[in-house]
Length: 628
Image (cartoon, rainbow, N blue to C red):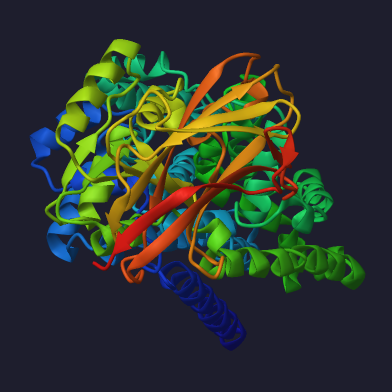
């Protein structure tokens, strides 16, 4: 008999070790393959400071300082590389898997422990945030530890009183979403406590005392919480919140919902089995249930959802893994007389249904660019390779400073754009910027809908510089602008009609006709429409050689994309500035500028001059290019 028990323990521990190794591999795999994104850059810079400055910095942030203080100590040992800073979160994620196994063992036995640990080890949402230098993996760990300490306390372990106070305090100082954990375990405690006879008044008294002690511990930070509570981001979108959060918990944020849609009924079936069967640890079962559903329900009901808040669901990751694994408790050998083989097979098949979408979601996380974080590392390298010695860099929003300067160590001047600028501030700032006479400006736009909702800085740049191009790098927009004189009237009259209602009155090259390869050709087009338009059109400007092949070009909506043709009014004059970047290797010679308009379908509008058809391309004139 002893040999049998020892063998069971050996295989259980061996299987758990394999699961932990799997979870470790999935969290450390390609840990530094992606660049830090904005918030991670803020983390990297903040933890470099002294402890008093970290606390002061967190006071101006929307997060408490606990994670930053712990990471400050970690980076003293491990360094401040991407791998080093993210490895703290990866380690927290691995420890969460171990705690989840302990919760599963206490709540349902060996199979539940292995099932819960395996479920969390492979959970895409948990892995995603275990690879991020932010506090969310730690938040998930503290949620699991709090549930463990609370369960131990409920079972009469007196030392658990200290651990419960400690996890409550650390959780409060880690993230404000930890409130979901406190609410969940207290509701479960009250329900289970009321169901017991006789009522355990001493347990209730100690429970309340521990909660109050944690609240007193958090008291010094309470004023900062009140400041954060009044902040509401502008992009709250409660529509479809419950569905999006549910799928994020089940399949992560790197898988389209339709590919994992079948998991919702699977989860409901497992959840029903978990709640229907009597549990040997009802406090764990009901705490896990409430910690899983309360964040979803309260965020959706409160109308405070935005996709960025999916990371708050880390408080639910471990509890959900335990809850969904509870039906496995009836498939252990000791339970088989009460559970048919077919029922066990159904449970195992339901549990195994998670694997295909998880594998796809993890593949997307590791390899698919569309799910990658903002590539500040690549952008900094691109600017360093392409910029001239007198160019400048603008960061809009300004809180990109930390992450961009983490990667960019060059000599170019970096300008943080003002936050929520008034028209007067935007004018003054852009005037001062242009006085520096940078030939070219590289502008990083991120979250500008929040930092500059009226797009005043971008509008000033579109009006006072020549936009060369822009490209999206994941959720970052990198734009380039050239500077030159700003003519307010045409140097050359065109008198061309494009389509039925649009006229190109003329153009200007800012008084230049000779350029050097690598420079920017500043082209100003002067448009007028006979009537208000209801169609969006794009402007193309091509620079072509003698063979008619374009050697440089720009394609964009008018005025840097900020005054589209469907917003034009009859008789309005549109001053539209474009920059044509000449390739550095462009051979010397004469080149011709051409322009026109085309629909989003690619169809070009016909052109007439003096009542005569002029094709679909208007020749503006020639320029001379000298070799670099």
